[in-house]
Length: 125
Image 1: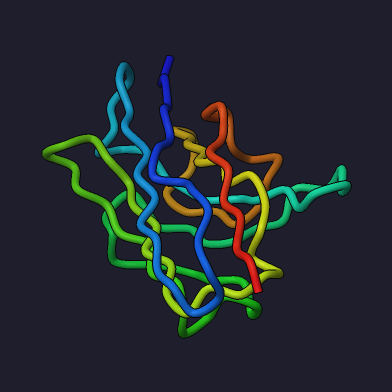
Image 2: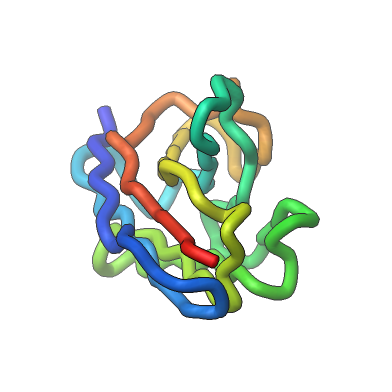
């Protein structure tokens, strides 16, 4: 069982930066594929944002964030990060980190077994 806790969200202006963190406990963090998803206001669907493989060598990003967001992991701290630069109002939403020990890498929401509670990001124009 992997327990995830996100932090780092907040209210920022367009063009600002934020770094989200997701601290894990339980399970074997170094064996987990990790991802970030977000839910925009009024939307039921969770949108894929970024993913990183258990080794950290493979990453993938949604087209909407490519070049602006960077996912990374620190296995020594059992933490995954999402550095968000040049934020836009359309980046507003609740950001969730997710983990799975069953595959080495995935961008598919349904393949993640563990989810954090989410952290709110609001980008004003």
